[in-house]
Length: 117
Length: 135
Image 1 (tube, chains in turn brown, purple):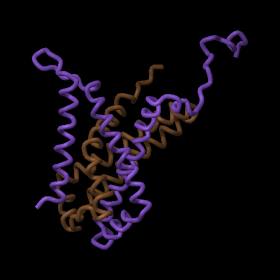
Image 2 (cartoon, chains in turn cyan, purple):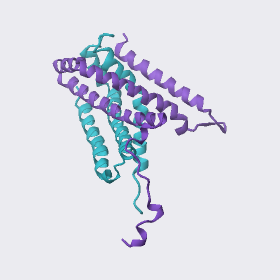
Image 3 (cartoon, chains in turn brown, cyan):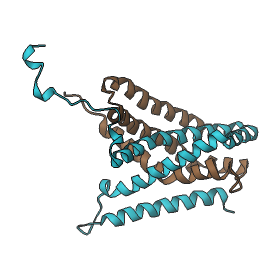
Image 4 (tube, chains in turn cyan, blue):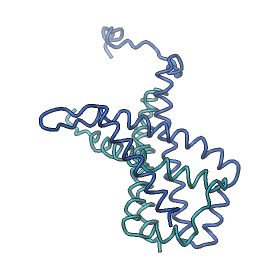
């Protein structure tokens, strides 16, 4: 097989996604998913969140967080299906679903972050 | 296919149950760690919905917040939080295996790399909380 492997490229995205998700997702999820909805902490106002998310650096971080988290999922979940369920015969379909989903999500995240007022 | 290849010893694979990973605790932990990626993806989807609601205005954002208050979402996010913690902890604990740093020709000990990862996690978390809640 002379075909070059895409593995290192997807592994890098997986790895970057794993790192950024490990650093940022626990606190964001704790606040927005538990602490604010349950009233443990007063949620910041709409204006404040909007102003914060609209900062150029915040837009880049939000985009990277969405996109890389999805690529992290794509790569890891693909191997979970591969090892866990042993569905090698569905490999092409799984690759399409996982990496395709992450690419679609990346485009969507770029659009959303770009048009944030 | 020629008949002499049909029973080649190298081709024999002992059938493995789909639930092979339930037999050993370390395998269960491995699979749970792998499944944490699904919850990371769920967070990314939620974050995109939040950004969309932010763009659409105050009313849409309030609706989004009310949606997060529904019992199903709170329960789901409670589970998601546990998986995301599992992801972060296993990720930082494995960091010394992936990152080899040499300083003056000596390899920086694993414990230092792990500790600096946890420190970065702490700083990032406090930073995010301060940006959202600080005065």
